[in-house]
Image (cartoon, rainbow, N blue to C red):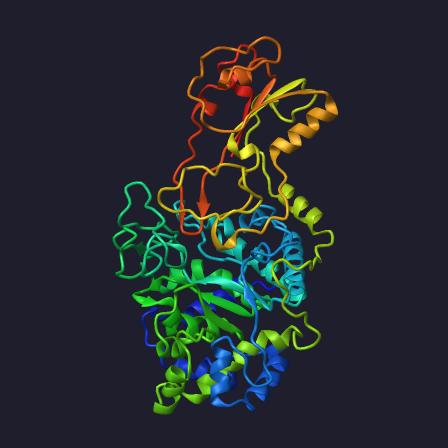
Length: 550
């Protein structure tokens, strides 16, 4: 795995000692792959093929390619979320979230997951996957999307995400890392509020309003606007200096670029007052020139604000909403967009396509319900990686493992399935209840998985009880209000109270969850009676034997 040396990193920091606000106009020419500034290495053959094809295209064709359409003999690419599986598709594996994979500390596992995800994307005929997610790093606990990422340590995040990129690339899929850069909160991330696709705000942390995000360097601040969902004054801006930017936030992208990343998604937020997707410092100077990135830059939902500024800044892929003959064509004619930049945009759209051999025998795009199934042994791999990610933090009185039990009680929505499933929309909006009413197996938002089935704790306990002859009791909601209304009835008859369900069990296991994901984060888990009363009030079960699983 590529790792920049300390000396190299310090040299790069010396090379770019100017502030982020420095004029980057000189980098317009340098960002062009044709300039020779970016050393292509293994990507050279892809560039030669792409440049030769683009040379045959008309201006209208080039604009169509940059807008996500066909052009000449080039067919539009198919791109899709997420890093855990092809979103919304049937017959796919839902892999562990990024944060779980980070907790394996296993680069081989990360690469194996990336390869498995890539194989399933390829089987569906998808060319580029929107993942892995590098940022938010999770410098603040209030950010709802940290489950998608690889943790707060930039070095570790880069190693793990770089391994995922290697795996995806080995399967023939373009990996597009996101969100570039410093997308560290969900509140006011968009001009229309914090919602997905322009929806409602994601809520505020306690005492919210203006939020300062603590980092290792004191020079980084994230300031939000008014946090109401009706706010149209624009997304928050990140004020940051060069040192913090390079050492913390840009660092993970070094690894993904040098591991073969072919796409980059620019973020919704502003950096030092300029939208990320029209910030030439970010896209041209740092991502393309300094990191040597040869691939596509494209925008997150609603992150692009203008047509020409975004194109000149370094965006390469958009839609006809912004880029058409009326916009880019006119800009080329009047000189506000150079033809060599338009050529570069079209070439970059083809780089991953040619580099990964997608021009030869690539599957056609499958419908979401088509019986295209190339999962192989992926379910077993995902199960193994998930198990490797779990760490036991505390085991008072050696309560675990639960062996030779004759009776167990389990509690909580999180233990059993939802009434409707396995897949339902997981958005975190104002007004949502604090918990998901069922087993929450994936994070919310665009990174959620498409579950083919769902194994729940209740299912496992029930099977164990059947096998071992154990008595099992359960309370799979959080509506109990009468802790001390009585003990059990006669024999197996239960009084519907927490104490009644817990009575005479040798162990009680409590499963909790809290909503979290894209758009927002619930701020607390309220254990309620489960944590306060369930086993502590039972005659024969000690409080310390209560196992809480969140």
